[in-house]
Image (tube, rainbow, N blue to C red):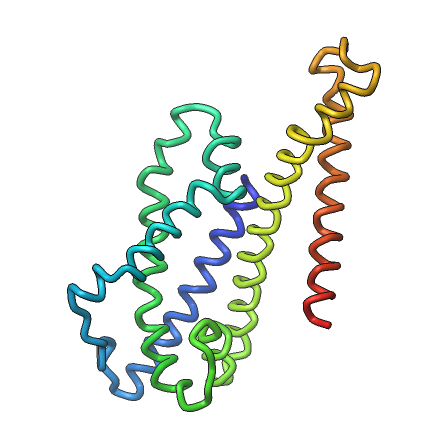
Length: 211
């Protein structure tokens, strides 16, 4: 969890720098921050598509292995919620606010170049020639992806070992009478092998999809 906390800080710092660059570009071009906003109405918010996407996002928060691992497996005591209950909403709110100048600058300066909206974080510093900001943005993106992979592989390795490998191993071996403390070393080895296997499988599937 310390690693995940560190990568979250790195990601936030990188996003703040790119958002500051976007604000600077908008200010130099005398473009309002909220110019040309789309007109939303109640029908769009209550549309079946919006409601379905919102429900899927809410379900993913609970059902995805990495979210379940952080919320349930890593939860040790009630005092852990002392800072989480206000720090997590604040963290997400900061990203939501920083997206506004980034999206506005990307739509103004990069829309004619055919750059996808999900690439604004990397392409905006590159377009402006800000190599240092581009490097930090790349590190932030790499940090976010690394954190997701770390949590997902650990969560899946625990699921594989606890629900598949260990029950079969105990049933068909001579370890039924051993205490849980005696199985700690073997359990760690099984989980490490599962993590390596998952990473190799992901690399192999990516090679197949790219080819």
